[in-house]
Length: 355
Image (cartoon, rainbow, N blue to C red; front, top):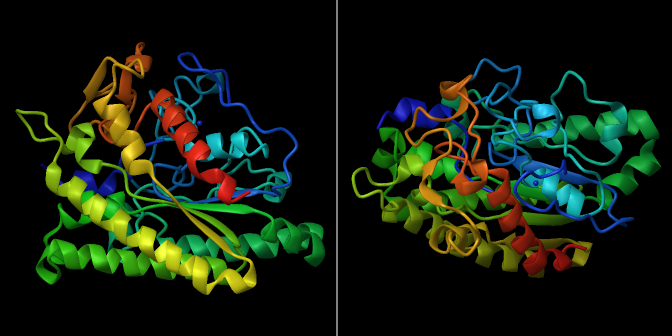
């Protein structure tokens, strides 16, 4: 399996308001007390921040976006919407969460939130380098830049209101394991897998603390999905999920969930709230019970299943007319239908803790 290609493609998988062709649209909660939605992460939630980068971790060309309004390829790694869009809609803030780095970002969008996520990024600083992605640290720097822009736009008092009443999400880690640890020998020479996962947990906690320190009071933390079940990571021949990568994801998730509980205790004094969002078992349920959810294909991607069937490697691939039958859109990322189901489950399970 070519490690170079794996590394440069964004993170694996997952989980959404344009009219849906195969699933009911998510319904927002109406007038929201939430000021804004902010998203940090990798290609799971990147709506187009990489569009103007000289990177292979881009999706601003067909067939991406074939089911997005107008059939437009915006840079979202799916056939339609991605998790940030769904969450913003369900929270009653807005229908689509735009990229912070974009040519056509309207200043008014700054008032209701943006995404800083970058395909190919991770908590490990080495993960973002080959992908030419904005690292987790770089995304925090963009958030600080955003705050200055917001203050210039609306003043200190209103900017403070937007920042303090916003909801923040982070979704990274899949690239660190699938594209870094299992594809590049450097980290494997430095760490065994449990030690590397421990290092990732520490890096993720530090990221969350820094985000909290610069103003984010309500943070939803997505765990790592079952990356061993995405088409490109499955065992060739048997097409079974890669158990070792899934175990690494589970180990990370169990560790970070405990850390989130600790942060809630230690940082409750400043009225902060942290919530672990379980994407692992919600997506795994989709994979294991695909018939129940109306999917016909679980091991193959709609646009292909090898490491070269994602990001720029499938540029101008013919449209996939039956995307509703697939959990995976390309070899790494889910279809809008799959994302919609998973995010709906996560929303029902956890979001009341952040409201």
